[in-house]
Length: 201
Image (cartoon, rainbow, N blue to C red):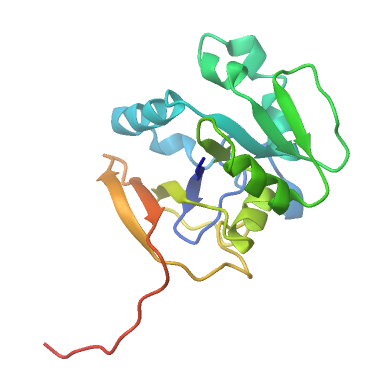
């Protein structure tokens, strides 16, 4: 069974909108596009490159696809795997594109992704795609969150965990802190939320 791994850059207050550049996503009047750039260092670059070089297929939303489709075919030397990976794109309007291989999903997205997860193949990596991520979370389709948590607050914008998040427990499988204070941490599903009484030590 294939896993869905959500890879996100996230602020301390949970915002994932437009980390890469000023014009990436200005919806809702978001004014801080490109907020990750001052925090780069070799540790962060190595971690990102490691994840990029893993076997994967891509699962992304329409907005992310529109940003990536003109760019990555022209920069194959930087990340050849993204061009050869099958790109599953959630879109109710797009049905084909020259950036191949691509499969466009419409209608009941959660049901279709559930079926894709049951197929043979590499894990599905989700980058950006804030609206799609909400659908995945609400339908309990995320197996792991691979997060880079930045030491800033943005006050508003699209958040990783919004209303409708399914209660779930996670375990840390890998973590480190960069010289710029970015926490790189991978969480995998670990069953239901445990509860109990707090004991006074």
